[in-house]
Amino acid sequence: MTNETFNYFDLPIGESPEPTPVSEQRRALARELLAISEQLVRLDADEAALAAYTEQARALREQLEGHGHRSMRDILGRLISGQGSRQDALDMAEFEILSGPASPLSPPMTLWLDGDTVHGSATFGRVFMGPPGKVHGGVLALALDMLMAKTQDFVTGLGMTGTLNIRYLAPTPLNTEIRFEARLNRLEGRKLFVEAKVFAGDTQTVEATGIWISAQGDYRLRDHFAHLGAARQPA
Image 1 (cartoon, rainbow, N blue to C red):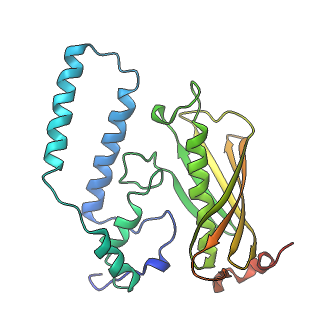
Image 2: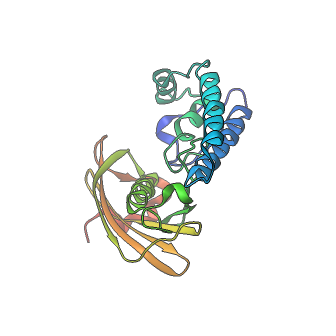
Image 3: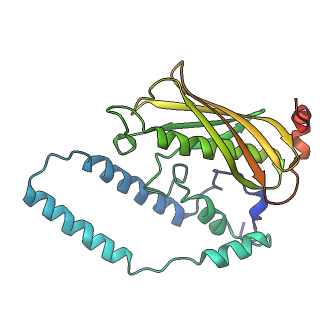
């Protein structure tokens, strides 16, 4: 295991390798910080209690500031050369907004491939609220951007969001498991066309389409997804 290496271009989008002991503790800390953020929403505490909590939070922040940060430049350098460690690979995925299990800004949202579909799942708490009791539409837009970008796991190359079009069909509730689905529609040179849906129970709440633009030449299906060949050409 000590000789295991990772390549940036082989890392699945929005998924982490098995965690190291350090990453397990980072995840645990992130869960506590997210839980604290949830408790702060409309917290019914008096001024003295809030002042005491602020001092405790300040003390923790000052302790954290006593530690350095791993160099992203060095991490990327090793991963791009195919010599990244497991911790390097984890550092690339663990702190992704919404999907990173070590990010206190993440529910977390889980992403995975199943056949020709990208699936996602998340339960959004109070900190993600827009209208009362509902998930903010901008949070759902971010979730869809991440979900749809993962269709690039089907292809060679990696790119960025070109366009993202969203239609909100119904409110999406908080504290409910929300399901996401995305499919690669077609490829046109450097463009990857994607469609996606969001569900709360059996109710579809959002639909979306988007285009991703490759930064590395034309997109091509990976060999083990050749059965999706119908997506190579425009309909």
